[in-house]
Length: 320
Length: 318
Image (cartoon, rainbow over all chains, first blue to last red):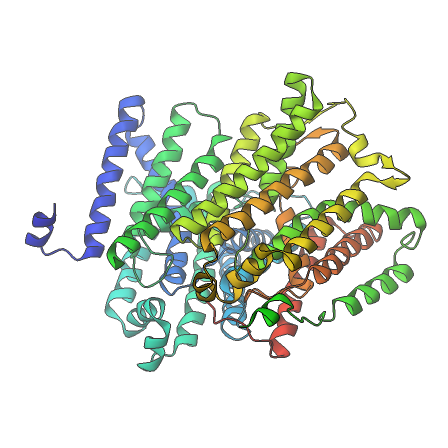
């Protein structure tokens, strides 16, 4: 394995992604063996559609984690953004206004998180945990137990439509992956995010505007939550206060399975994509095998613990 | 850090007493029935469950940790208590099972955090999922009531004229006071947050103490489950979702710093009363529970803002 990797001159990060692709293939083979419907085109497209939602949310989170932070508010942000988008769309009849409302809400929440972390200097997990509950409460109050449903077909295509036989959100996933990877790898700002996460003091001493890059990742994470909320809303065709509650843990799972280190500075969006696919394959496989949905939080929790544990062990091995 | 300063952290109670007085005065005027004897004992009784979580949470946060799994774990313990009691016909076995379950989850949290050097908030977010899932599986997704066998008297009963929940609360406070201020374990907790290197040099068990802090949290989650199960006369897999947030809010409002090593049990008691008074007063004013959650969140952020404005030293955001 080592020799092969050296011959192909893979970086450690590419090797990490490759090993996770292998896990995904083995997992897929295992589930296909147990369930004959897993490899049906319809099911695989459905799996990609589910994974695209998790990926959109997890891509913003990946930037935050790369920069050495954490955003626990993304699931609550999805719910509030979707509910605002839904009511705005109902009131005006215009999908564009709805999309603008959802995106603006996502960005606004992200900005508040960023300011709490960079200006007030509250530790990120506490700041975003606090905003989680505030947003959650505001959403429930705003919806007052009601749901808003029935949106124009043009909007619903965003979540449930197909183009050339492939679900629309999968294209969104591809666009975000390409643009995001370009941003991280080939722009100064992207490299500064890695530098800030790897060693904040060194980055600051070499002239990286550390606080501004931190603010940026929270704003982007909020924006991606806004985008994910639109896709989610379009797929469900209904907005309720409790939507998106399970998404935070799933997005964190995707980021960690994808090999992005919670200690900051190493990881990639490609890894997060593979992480989202692995997590979705597990949940989809459980569904196909008729395993009760009550198992989902348990399995997701175990996966999160296992991946963060693997991350810590591999760091220890490298530092020894 | 010398032992004298380590043992007696002088934390001025930061405005929480004033906040509490202001809230009590405001609700007495604004909320019908707030200032009645029945309501005061109601607030106290409801605050006891929160206190049983907030006291260990104080030590955990002082040790630069966090436990997000408490609410899910508390729900799980009520479910385990109800299921075991119904299956065996013995309330004592149910109580033992609940306490063992809580303690095991605490030990799991502590072991993962201490041995693998993992960030506490992610580990406990993971165990939150695990506990939530187990609760749903054991209870098959729904609640059980009518356990009987004297379970509900844990919530409504009295001993020598004093309500049982209040006795639990006072007992827990005494245990934590002694642990923090009169034992080596207390010194270790302060050192875990303040200066782990100093602990190592003083030959104190860093990892063991860290595991013990989380195990203690788990144990008291199990004890809190007795009161909650008594109140429900059974168990429910989602009964205590989000309770950890009220506990963290009480600790933060009570002036314990997330920077670690600096905290006060007295502040936490006042913080618990503040959160309890807020919840109760807002209920009486028939404010929707959703807005109550947002208001508690707002108070936490406000408390952290005040600390920041006062220039209380805080760690660089990690």
